[in-house]
Length: 83
Ligand SMILES: [Zn+2]
Image (tube, rainbow, N blue to C red; front, side, top):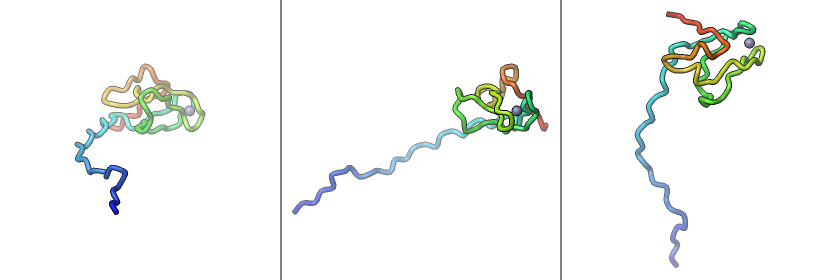
């Protein structure tokens, strides 16, 4: 009796590691409407809205918070710079 596996065997593929996401220059923000501190959203998609966990105001798109050059003019939060 031939007992062949019907499913293909998973092969280990060596995939190159994806480059790490850019380190945000600004790590924290202050909500303009209520003044709460917000971490730079690193897990949201670029097009997702960032909401203040405290007052639930929509503060802007995640992409405008991230990267080397956050779009501070478009978000309703102030960058908190530690440097
Ligand atoms: Zn707020």
